[in-house]
Length: 245
Image 1: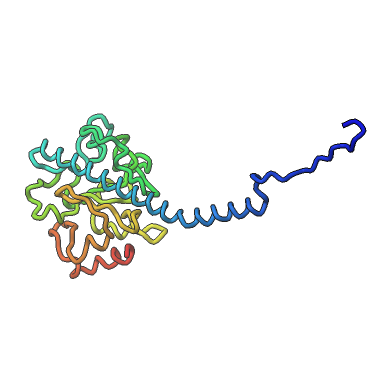
Image 2: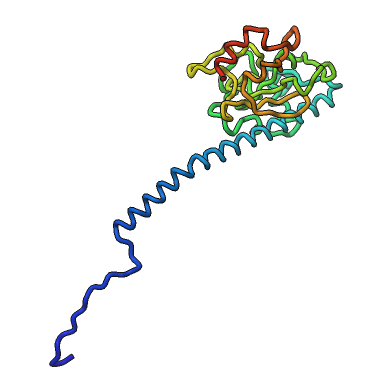
């Protein structure tokens, strides 16, 4: 204004802006909340992976039952004939993936930290190309080798007969004695990714999450050339139970 005092402008703090202290307080609160929620989120993710693994195992068992129904009740052998492979055979996993439409991804546990295939490991005795990374093996004494396998009708207690289980190795078949293959971390070839438990599939088609020792005692769910027996009376279970407490 002419002849008057010049207008004086005063800087005024915006009441909606954060001060540095307020911003740091908000960051600290978010950090605390994240720390509180992470275990719950991690636990939920772990349970989700375990549930998916159980679902996959059920689908594998269902495909195996379909195979048996198409083959006069005979269970799928470890290495059925596969003319498309130079070796003339494939693993049971590959056969089910291609012939029964399970797909190849179903054989890898979502919670596993390791998965292998015979092709990747250059196993001279294995298939030349018909295999994929996997985490499920079948009990070799029960389900045979090469073209020899057992009939479903001769299994006395299908609900207690272990049929497939999780593994960290590439073999399509293993047995109870495989606990002797101890890896550098002190564990053997069996899987233990679900709160120290593995996915165990049974001959009647049901699936359980259980510790390895629980498959051996008080009742032995493995089969051997002499048949199943009580885990309490066999000292060879000791290392198995010690590694996977």
